[in-house]
Amino acid sequence: MQSIQQRERPPVRTAVLTAVTVMALLLGACTGESHSDDSGATVGAEGGEVSGKAGGQDVTVTVPREGARNGTEVEFQERPKVDTGLTDKHLGVAGLGAPVEISTTRGALTQGRVSLSYDSGKLPRGVTAKQIGIMVFDSDLGAWFPLLDAEADPRTHRVTGTAPHFSLFRTFFVEPGEKLLHMAGREIKLTVDAGTSVMGYFQKLITASAVAIVKDLFAVPPALNCDKPSATVVAEASTAVGDNSFSACADGDGKEVTLNMVNGVAYPIRLDRLPSGVTITGRDVLLGSGDSITVIRNVIWMTQGQKVIAGAKAGSVTVNEKMTTARLHGHMDGSAVAVDVLLGTLLAFMPALSADKKWIEGIAQKAVNSPSVKDGGAGLARATRMTVDDASTSRKVEGQPDVVSQFATLMGAGDCLLDSKDALSENGSAKERFESAVKAAQTCAKLALGQFKATEVIPALLDSLKLVPEIVQAQIAGISNVLTGGKHKLTSVFVDLSRFDSRATLKGNYQGTWQAHRRKIIIDEDGSGRYNWFPFLNYDDPSSDPPCVTAEPRGCEVRFRLTVTPAGATAEVTVSNDLEEWPIGHKVNVSSNAEAGTITFDTETNVDHGGGGSNEFCGPRATRYCGA
Image (cartoon, rainbow, N blue to C red; front, side):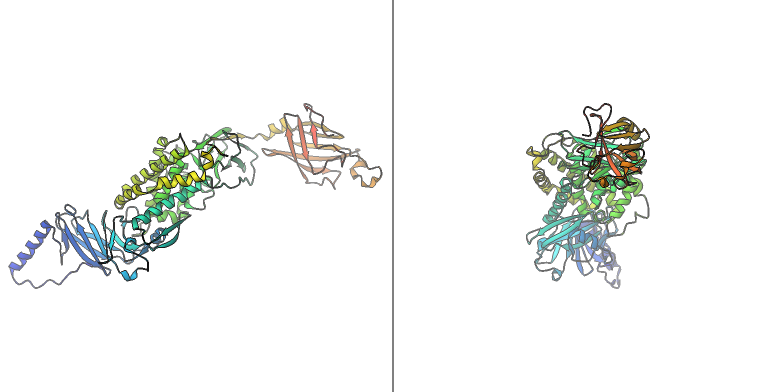
């Protein structure tokens, strides 16, 4: 419904009246006076004021000098079908009036202050003028932004703020009380009192979001898990200080083996660019992705051929058949903190990225196959361009979040941060690294948002934030033992990978003849083996002797098949003349001590049936006597 107040044109009775009307319009264009007749509300280069009604709201735009072209006609329309529910839920605010579109039918309007009336009867108890504001929609980004200088006048029931551009505007309020927001899989807790302004509320929101996301980097790690330990890849993790705070294991077999890693060193670890034969696949991007933050973070580092292992989740990379030997190196990295601060800052205004995890996962799956990733990842925007060109996903719904545009903005900010990562503090204390990372994130957030019309108001918000002290305080408290020389120290981590040769290992560590008291094991090069022993006899009760005592050839015998893996060897019984103790299919762990020249059959009881011996067997190069 057009709300510019148009009147029926009065009968034109004389040429003089017509001339006066034309002169009045021309003078208005030159002097900045505004008019509202059948041609619409008009303003000129000298500025002025245009007013109208839309959706039961009084709307006024105060235009400064040079804020419009001469003869600019402005109209106001209510847009009740614009859905703002997702944004309001994401930001924790409530709509107060229907969206109003301010547009021009002729000329151009570039600057001005927008004033909207509001119905105070719709405000809950406890809401003051400080909590009432105006939002503007940026169609390029597909997001609503608050006018941070907006002020409400409780006497006139109007709220006024500077418009960065002219499109959709709406009034909103922030209700005081305890709030629990869900942002990209993180719970954000906020407390709003009667003294909290709109500006102060969004400061709290961004700070709380960034702190919550960064804390993920320092949380308690899960247990390392490899469901199917690899028989082809050996992984040995270590740290420069010689502790066990970083662990890794190879999972699965075939052309691709997953290297699972758990970071327990109390701060984020970024791996250097992965060596030949080690890559990042879609599974590695989505592993443990209970939220879109993890997916986005992994996409950013995946395009650089790198991996960040946070403390809260296990990370993985993929080892392919090209790998023979490789060493992964990781270290504490300020840019890992910077990426998460950047996410926390931008996602406060990007509800589409916070809500549409499935779409983000789809981008991740496509991005890992991007040619630019395979060629070395020359930038996030380039690496992910193919994922946002699909017309079916790039439709823009007016007034609603645009996930494609928001993702492109985030990737551009990520490019900025990665371009500057070498300038981040990599030396000095953790506190200095955090401060450097947070400042870099703020800079890149401003650059990313600065390309959009509505976000000219955002740099002021970021400049006034207390992100640096909040982040530093939260994380220093979380890793105080790092700074105080406690259990954890600033250290590098390593994962050494090698291709496991089961045949060579069998031949070098297990093949041969092994002796112990009254026992002998012979293992052939193909893994087949024989285990012979003659147990001690119970002369008082011969019936208790195992049946194999009287077997021919005389003595007990088990035949087995030995399987060798990086985790050790297993002997599975294939033939037995002592089925009670050694049934067919029974498995026994076998370990080798190449340095001592021994192997050990890890049975529950010694095969001598109480004879006092051990299950250790000596080879020809054994340094001691075995089995007794």
